[in-house]
Length: 82
Length: 451
Image (cartoon, rainbow over the protein chains, first blue to last red):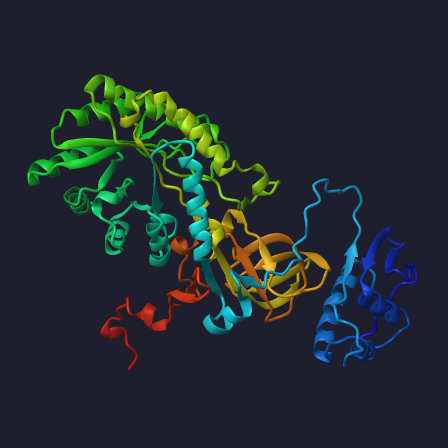
């Protein structure tokens, strides 16, 4: 299983503001984006994240996983994920 | 479960500094769920996707508004529907029911107008390509032939002598109206005296009756002043005919070319902020025409062949999301089932695109691609758009002009076209093509058939 690691120098606030100290770039996350990044920081697995999203939000596992994949691609693109 | 929160896909937006947009353009998040009271879902369920949808009500509103705007500034106004802009029979017929004549530029369009019940005398026959057969038909049926070049003029003279007929003619005049590009490939030039020469040649021939003067200065014109100049130059030619030959032309045709509110690719501000209004075009033209200095009963009719500005906003293209993609640059891409083969004008317009369902508030810079297996198939290079799912619908607006005449069968067939009628009913006005339609025109040599 793929292991996602958020670097130590990524800081995230409760309001969804994310700062990547290595590049000096800042971002805004929506609520689910923030939930996912926080879970990744806590070393959660994909299954756990998808399970949590489906538990809290009105969606199905397939949609949640599909969107998770897309989100991961974006995080990698912005060097927020190793 | 009722207590779950509303789902929205995870989104991350990068902050950019120093890129403020002082115009604060509104992102496209407002869904467009219906057209003239008929829901998008209902339309797609019944007629499939992609689907072209026209609004009869909007066509009539546009035509009536334009007529009112011109008639309050000039006493005699006649519109002629520009067939090349959209020659679907139902579309032409709405304009004809509103009193418009037909403006055609080929024998096929001429025949179509006749088939739709337009009398020859109410057809304006323009363009550089009029076959001998088409000219003869037009002369016999007393259509108004707008001569484009000397070869055509001499062919008409020949035909009238050969068949002992009289032809109703006008000349198309090209001129410098201060805009680029100069459309000097159509008609006779004003400045170099060619137009005057053509008029003299016509006046020398008893079989030719000069009935009008015509200019069409360009397309998607963004200045009204050019029309004032064109109108005044045609007025001077009309004056010349009156003074030299005591002939008062019965009409002056200023063509079309008024810009619609579709924004051009490369245009920074939205079209509605930079394009002159119909009132400004009307004001300019009537100001130019008052230089005619004719007696009231001799004032020529003003003919307008407005196409785009009357039809563009009446057409919508409904399309379905096929897939979401993330490009290597990180940019989102959306693939929809309507490509540039159906939306030819996508090559020069930034068509407004709206989701057809509530799609959340998070928007992202997105490229919208069509379904064709071709790199050129781009509907919008860049648009701030909410995230949609496979199967969601989008509505592309301002597709009424030139799309249903320049679309092509390529990789996919052309889809159904419907019209939402004034009474709220929906009529199919062009059936979707199928394999039989394509094969019907093909001939497979016997020796190539697989046994």
